[in-house]
Image (cartoon, rainbow, N blue to C red; front, side):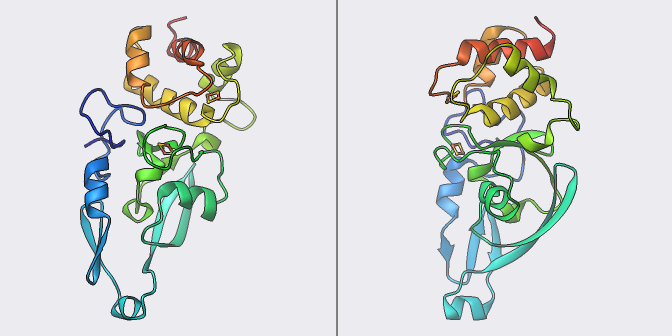
Amino acid sequence: MSTELPESAAPPPTGSGEPFSSVPTRRTFIATSAAVGGAVVAGGAFIALPEEATAAGASPSSRVSLTVNGTRRTVTVDNRTSLLDLLREHLGLTGSKKGCNAGACGACTVLVDGHRVNACLTLAVRLEGTEVTTIEGLADGGELHPLQQAFIDQDAFQCGYCTPGQIVSGVGCVQEGHTGSPEEIREWMSGNICRCGCYVKIVRAVEQTAGRK
Ligand code: FES
Ligand code: FES
C-alpha cells in the first residue's frame, strides 16, 4: 500500500514511490480513524483504550520509539497524533511543513524506512521501531545533500514553503530510480504541489542529482 495515501491508484503522487506497508490509504485512514467504543482504529489496527481513559473521556496516549535523523527518540503522544505533529510539536523539527494537513500537497513529505510518506496522514503510534528522515537529516554536517545543492544551483524555489517536501520527495524519487526522463520525474513528483510554479526547475534539480545533467 502506498505510503502516501493517494485517492487514486495511478502513479504514486508524492510521497509514495514504494509502498510503506503499515501506512493506510487515505480512504482507509478516514474510514477507520474514528474512535469506536473502547478502541480506536489506527491505520487498520485496533488500539485498546485504557478503561480509565475512556471512562473519564480523556484522550488515550501511547509511547512510541523511533529513530529520527539517526537519533533514537521516545515520546508519549496522544494516539491521534500525526507524524507531522510529532516532528513539529514534540521534537521541534519544523522543516517539514503543514500545507493542507490532508494529504493533498506533499509539503510534509518525509522518508519512513526509506519510503516517501505524507507525514500529515501517518499516525505516529504506527511507527514504532521505524527510521524517519526529514529535511533536517539530509545534510552531512556542513555539506548539503546533492539535491539541496541542486535546488540552489537550479534556482528551484521562490517562497520556499513547499521546498522541504519537494527535496525529501526528490531524494525518494532518485533512490527509487524514477528519473529516466523529465516526464517520469514529473509523474513521480506529482504529489508535491508548488504554488509558485517552480516545476520546471524542480525537475532540473532532480535530473542534476540523478546525474542526467
Ligand atoms: S500533504 Fe501533508 S500537509 Fe499537505
Ligand atoms: S516555492 Fe513557493 S510553493 Fe513552491
